[in-house]
Image 1 (cartoon, rainbow, N blue to C red):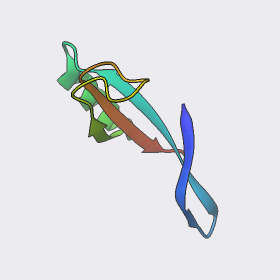
Image 2: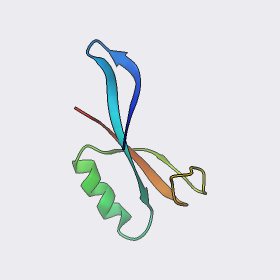
Image 3: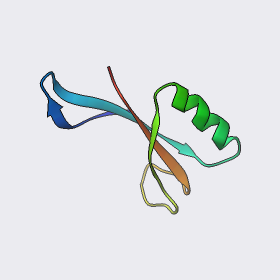
Image 4: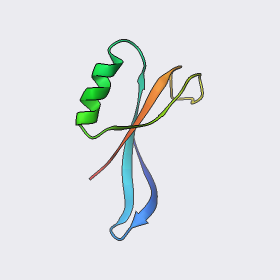
Length: 65
């Protein structure tokens, strides 16, 4: 999924994509792999806080180029 977010730059709006992952087993390995691909953790959920997120999920984003 991708979402267009502010602030705008001289080239136009910056675009980001996001991913929600469950905190099941092997989460540290998955985070290391995703981090090497440019993903950054921007939030976590501890309960069913988001409709799209499972309980205890990690939210990641990266800028589209």
